[in-house]
Length: 452
Image 1 (tube, rainbow, N blue to C red):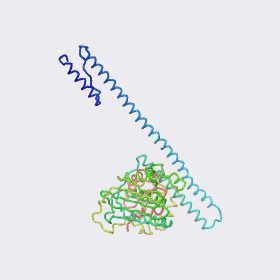
Image 2 (cartoon, rainbow, N blue to C red):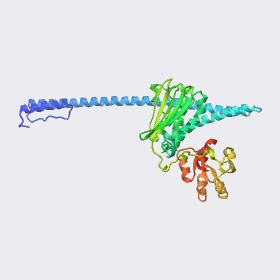
Image 3 (cartoon, rainbow, N blue to C red):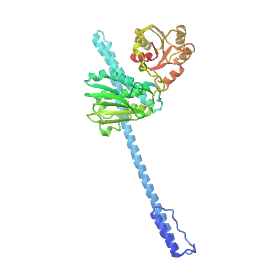
Image 4 (tube, one colour):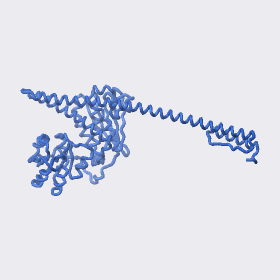
């Protein structure tokens, strides 16, 4: 340093100040042993740089604190909003559960009265049935959202005929839509061959039914249209209605759990407000996305996509392969074993099947079910309850499969939780039904496996 001239040191000072001006606060000037005026200036510059660095650090820390406070405020608002949504949801759920329960219990009590006219009895039974369906829908939604939130929901891919699903949904909703003085149309851009894809059939059904059901629910005039077409590597579905519509500021909320698009909908329309949240979760699980376009009083148009994966098993396609089941072709001479320990449940199954059955046998536990199948190898179908005394349904199925591989075994259980279907299929069941069992659904499931 002793060899550096005063002018060179001044140049160093200027360069250091320029670096500080550019934001480099790591600069420090050397101090010589001369202790002259230039050393004093160097010390002053070093102190100034330290103070600037300290001030900048304080400023950065202050900005960071501001950011943290802003984030905490957002989190607080979100938490308060979430609590408000959950409180509103719980209040709504209380209403939604108590209302159908009131219908079921109230009209069941009225049915006990002596001398009721037959038409009055039918009216009361219809109300009880509709209330039960409403209650079941609520319970199903709660189970589904619980599975989704706990990560227990899984995907089961199989051959799926998209055109058949669309036609079925159109036929299912058409009477209800026409009763409201409206019309419903469907439009599929898929050929017969392209309509067969590999995806989760039940979840695609659930998505479409949820969206079409909402379109019917919130529309009172005009038309409903839905359909599907190929879009690159995806299938794109749409559901369009001329209903009440959704305001722009609510479009981002309608897919959230515990949220309904408008507060007044809770008092005007029944429902738990979980349908679209479940629908969005299903779409994303299948690898797609969902979005909506809407305008109040003019209607809404929902779109969703799923990956297009042609079913690889269709090497030799023919139009005869279109139908996935032969429900209408089920004969009236079925031989059925009902393994069910609940007397009322067994009676219900017997009533559902007696017109289609040549032989109906009832057992109350797994041990009896195994013995009955051993002694009667001609059974076409076994309806196997899973939870029974002595031997449960799973063990009974394992033992039956040791000597009979051909009989159709359908598991039926009230334990409709994630993994039950997969477990039933793994032990040897051909299919699975969750209680409560509906007659048409039971016949449809049997029709998948009985071929004529």
